[in-house]
Image (cartoon, rainbow, N blue to C red; front, side, top):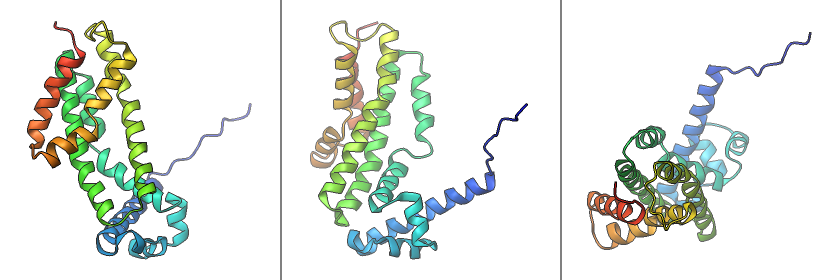
Length: 208
């Protein structure tokens, strides 16, 4: 009998690969802050990270790939999955939805600072727009489980389809409302989260 060939995974190699990614992204961040987007060349990033240009291309493919990872680390950091699991494990639908407001606040607080860095560093508009669109698509996809869980609990307003409820959740938790209320109107992040939680409950849930 032929033995099934199993993929060999080396913990050491995985740690080394993760460290290489971290150094490349950190080098890119520092270059953005000091030299702007034009100064953040692949060659400069490689030199700052202490790796070859071929390694940078192999790991990220392009400058846009590096920026995408920079946003991923900021928005969906190591504790993101933990807070999502905590929200989804909440047995009470209303408290579960209120925790979603906290997740939105955490994402926008972190993402806002990073996008300001990218804009200040002169990242060209088409690339920045592409990254923002990717973030919105990913956010929409990840919110499906929340709506499904509320539907299964029988708490979604009867006049709303699952698609409509998901659209409302995506819209209200979006970055535009955060930007207008927190950055332009001077709300605190805490006040934004409290308002968002109340608005989500009123917009999506029936009374128990």
